[in-house]
Structure formats: C-alpha cells, structure tokens
Amino acid sequence: MAFHAWVAEYRTRAIAAGIRPDVIDRAMAGLRYNTDVIQKDRTQSEFTKTIWDYLDTAVSDLRIRNGQVALNRHRAPLDQIEAKYGVDKQIIVAIWGLESAYGTFRGTIPVIEAMATLAHDGRRAAFFESQLTAALGILQNGDVELDQMKGSWAGAMGHTQFMPTSFLAHAVDFTGDGKRDIWSDDARDALASTAAYLAANGWAPGQPWGVEIRIPDRFDYAQARREITKMPSEWARIGVLDMAGNPVPNHGPASVLLPAGAKGAAFLIFANFEVLESYNTADAYVIGVGHLADRIAGGPPIQGNWPRDDRALTFGERIELQERLTGKGFDTRKIDGKIGPLTIEAVRQYQASVGLVADGYASLSLLERLRS
Image 1 (cartoon, rainbow, N blue to C red):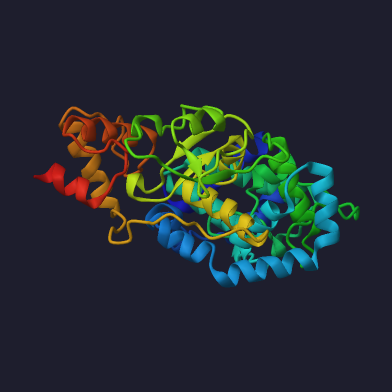
Image 2 (cartoon, rainbow, N blue to C red):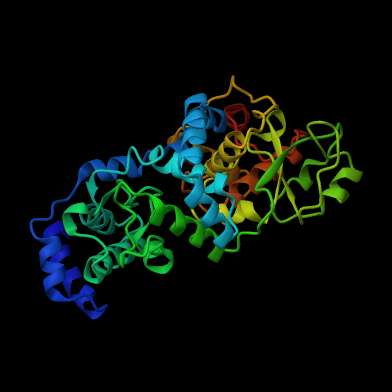
C-alpha cells in the first residue's frame, strides 16, 4: 500500500482510539515517508557491533568525564529524584549520557513522521502504530507543541529518549509547571521521568545491575544461563568470585552473563539488569548503562579481556549461522538474524556435540566450523 493511502486508512483507526480529527489532520498534514529512518532501523549499533567496540564508545573517557560534570551540576535535583524514586542517580545520569550525550543530541527528526514511516514499513508495524497513536495523544494532551516534538529515528524523545507509550505511562511533571516537558533545555522532568519509569518496572534500591567476576577453571558453562539464578554466596562456593577474589555480596539472586563467551569478561547480573532491559533490550546497552554509572561513581574499568581479534557477524552471516545450526538439528526456531536466547541455546547444543566449550557465543570461528 502506498504511504499516503496508509495514512488515510490509519486516520480512521486513530479516531477510533480517541484522537481528535483536528489533532490528526494538523499533525499529519504533508507527511512524507522517511527513507533515512528505515535505513537506520536496520543498523542499530547495539546489535551490529561487538560488545567491546560498543563499550569503547558508550563508556569512553570523555563520556565518563562529562557524566561526572553533569552529576555535579545537577546534584540537587538528582538527589531529590533518587530519594523519591529509589533509583541511583548515577544510573539516571548514565542513561542520559547514552541516550543524548547529557542533553546535547536530543534528536531532530519529527516524531510523527518517524512513527508513521516505521508503522507503514511493516517490520514492526503494530508496535510503531501504537507509538504513533501515543504520540498523537501527547499532542492532544498539550504536553508539547508539534514543532517541538522531535526525537530519534525510532521516535524516542527528549533528554532520555522516551518512547511515546512510555511517556504516557510514566512521564512526570517534576518541576510543577503543569507540563511533562522532556524536550526543553531543563532536564529535570526527563530525569525524574526516567527514575519513575525504572521504579515502576521494579528497580530494587541498593542492588547493583551487575558485578564483574572471575570464572574458575573447569567451570560448567551450561550454568551461564539467564534462567539459572543463585545467591552470590552459592556461586562463590563453586569459585565464582569478584575481581579481587572475594565473594560477591548477597544482593539477591544472580545469574552469570558471558556477553563475549568464555574468552570475554564475565558478570553476575541481578534483577536490576532486567529492569534496565525494559528501557532497551540489548545486553550491550544494559552493560553500557551499568558500567558507565559505575565509572561515573568512581569505579574501575572492566578488567577482563575481550576477544578483540573477533569481529561481529554481519546480518547475512547471522542468518547463515541460524540456517546451518537448524540444518544440523540444532533448531534456532527463527531465522531472523538475531542472536537471542533460542539461537544461543542452539549454539550451546552444537558446541557440546562437537566437544567445544558450550558458552553459547556465536563467533565467526563457530560459523566457519559449521561451514566445514
């Protein structure tokens, strides 16, 4: 269906969802299909870079320094926000840093245009149509004017890049001016809204997102699964210790995460890791936020090594990996180019069948072995 025909058809659905016709017509007048948005949708860095390349940028020395400056500059409202919502101020600042470089890059793409383009595109049509309807609802509520409603290619808005549905559900008027304003130079509403969002999604005060650990020799890598959780004291009994060789404090049930397999850094991750996933599902993003927060607070760099000789698999190679695994009887369930839990489990099973360390890491060398 042509884009403008889709817009006309969508108008009926938006009205049925409670959006006034005058709001729809004003917001969608002269709308165009944005091909740049589609191209960026296919190349998200959290999914196309290696974890170490992503972290080199996400937790660069400059971003750490700027985060410490931002924390000190906004300490009074951040202290109030932390006290009200129970979310560490360093975590809030780290999200601010990754999402908009502390407010310096808030996005310039008209949100209505981006959402309509992605909804028409079809890859995630239902999701982006719901975001478009929510964005129209924000305009109808009067929180922002149409010419100010700009954001990323994905429709994420403001200092901490709220999606429209998340804004409607969780944004707050921290300044008390009657508007939930996450777009202006004053970041307080955005920072408080981020804390409110994380609190609503179950943030546990005082619990870390994760702790870097040492994996003992002869570790059973089948234990490194998100669904296997133990108290840190239990992990310590089998030699899983922090980088100083001490048991990790019992902050709560934790699982072992190996974002680059057995040859990379390892972490014990807690329930707050999953809370951060509600903001962005990519492990690289969550580790980036958590580690940046730790560094802003004065913590050390990641001490484990990364397999820097490896490179990220291309989209085509990820598809090929899934096809070859499935063809050998290790069903990935989907052939979609995403290395998610089902593909990781298929990788583990294949690795175990050929006598490799079953860490679930989808590397180029693994693909080459499958080819041979």
